[in-house]
Image 1 (spheres, helix red, strand yellow):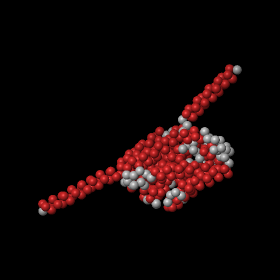
Image 2: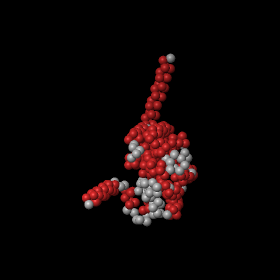
Image 3: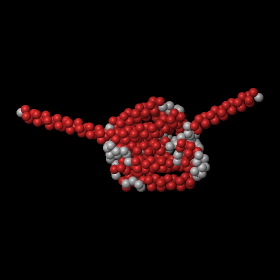
Image 4: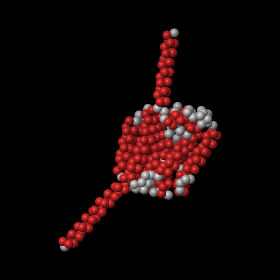
Length: 355
């Protein structure tokens, strides 16, 4: 009898603890998550399929576009606000489409992993046919956004669709699906510039693209460590499994290449001190992520992953402020050059008189 009473008390305590944790989690739910949770039962599964309740992915897709648009702005000018809005909407739609494609490919895998076993396609809230119709709608909206750009950008943007479709399959084939994700997620680094100038300046855009790819490998490897045990059991691959206990070493390498590539893009676009200050903050941010990372703690991995949306914003602000400073700095440099030139001319005149 005492045993049963003790067991009941233990269950009640556990239940109370679970409720307490649940209430605490609800308190910190994002606005996006609350929006999804309060949606009608018919709409909610589609919102979850698009990951509207998890907006970090949309920000991570948008920032390379924003960087490129900001770098393409004329000296002392703000980035094109219309283009930023257009690419923002496009990032939201295409990230949702990518999630739909991912879940369509991964139904059998998702049901075996703890973190993904409750996704709408897995639990039957949405049928494969419904998800396909929904995907067609998403891609149609994405195309509509793309058609607002010049034709060079339309063809450049359309050429990334193969990567979007191919990425979810890569975890079955290679330990480097994060590389393909990086190539996909950072296409906007090319597209943003061409949308402003009508074509890509590859000397500037390629280093920016490489920086974005390294960044994606970094944050998505951290993200993949949440599922490492399940992935090994299921038989799918990732850089988290590939790097294993040496993850911090490899991520440090990708962080260095990212910063070096951003410095290259900065030099080629004659960026000013706010840009390089932002790079210093980003380097510190990456160093802190890697140094404090606990790959065996899924909560810590998720926290580090989410923090990368702030990293993207830091670089964007650095580019914008750097651009705004360009004119005054260039004017000062020109004044110094003019003064030097005048001094040289005066010295030559004096030398002639002395002769």
